[in-house]
Image (tube, rainbow, N blue to C red; front, top):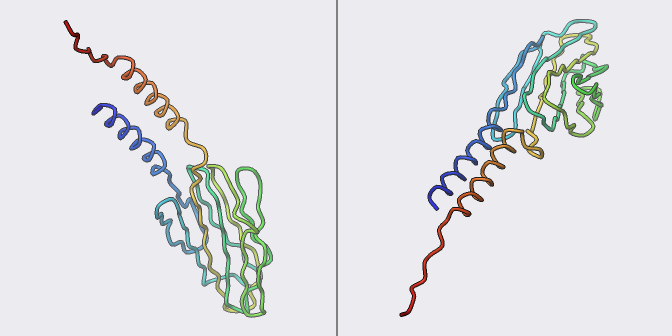
Length: 181
C-alpha cells in the first residue's frame, strides 16, 4: 500500500511539474514592459509607452509562450491626442484583430472580441495609430494556461502508474484461511 501511495504522489508531482514548467518570455518590445508575472495558471504582461511618435506610431511586443493558452488582450489610452487605427495579434494560426470597445473622444479601449485559444508559439502584438500631441498608451496581455489536453509526458506517467497499480494488485498474495482439522 505504501508503494502505491508513493507512486501516486510521484506521478502527481510530475504532472503538476509539467504545467509549472510553462514559460512566457518577452522576446522584444518597442514599449516599456512590466512582467511577465505568473500567478497560478495565469500570466500577465503589462505594456506602456509614453513617448509615442507623431503624427503616426507603430508599437509592438514580441513574446513566446511554451504551452497553449486562452489569450485576452486589452489596449487603452486616456489621452485625447491618441487615436488607435489597428491592433493585431499575429502568430501561429494567423492573426486576430483587437476591436474598439469604447471611444468617448478622450479615451479609447480596445480588446480581443473574445478570449482566443492559441497554441504554443511566438506571437507579435502590433499597435498602430495617430498621435497629435503628447499621448501615451497602455495595456496588458493575459494568458491562462490551457489544461484541457495533457502533455505527452503526463499521459505516459499516467499509463505507467496504471500499469504499476495493476502489476502490484496481480502480485498480491492471497491470505491463507485457517483450516479446521
